[in-house]
Length: 330
Figure 1 (cartoon, rainbow, N blue to C red):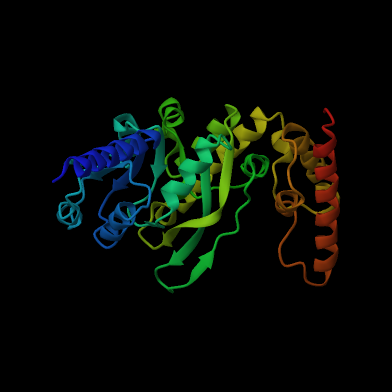
Figure 2 (cartoon, rainbow, N blue to C red):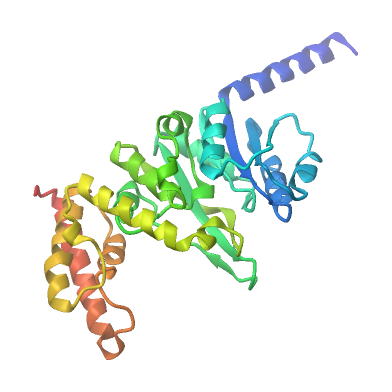
């Protein structure tokens, strides 16, 4: 090889090394338990990312099927494999991964989901531009029983997400990426089992961190009968209710205003009070998000009254949004 060729090769290597330094390390968290059916596709989706500076931390939480054999088929040097002989639970496993992680950002992905190739690149770019501290994304939901594939309906701004936390979890957990320091500061708690994701997001929101959802589909989220959220539905609801009440309390909203279906005159009292307070506590909530909030006070299936309940919802949503825009104090 000639000297000028060696010089070009050396310069190219230096450029590649500098480019890697400019790309912050992303730690991908993948807890696993008895996921032989889906784990290979999940791993492959991470290895196929256009963003290459990542570590994939796979912790197998005592699987007794073929999961480990499938994991061992992957030899990429960016994969860190940890095998536990005991099933310690999802919360412990997630916290273990966050403790091991070395990246600037932590990206969550469950072992039964699939990330699209641009996922890490787009989320890193978004976070590096300081548009949020944590970001999720639009996504597809795939029902493994029926084969039905649906597009998610997300709200994207920090205001909308933090407002909707009062009634639901408005982010898709396996689509989330955030600063690793946040996950270290706020570990998942065993007392929040079966609704630990929602409880974590409320704690982080109350601490003042900013959320966002990217307006692009970045993962496929599977729905199937073996999911924890399906098998422990009532327990999850109980934990959610307690965390929801705590979130409202920390926002200065009485539990009497908890969004739930109410007769017309009662919701004009409690519902409007809630809408006034939530928009005073969280400014710039969109009209669409306010409609979702107020809908929780209305009954479904109103028959002939449906046009009137929709009109009521729109009017109250406008009322709430106007309060948020003018920044009126409580």
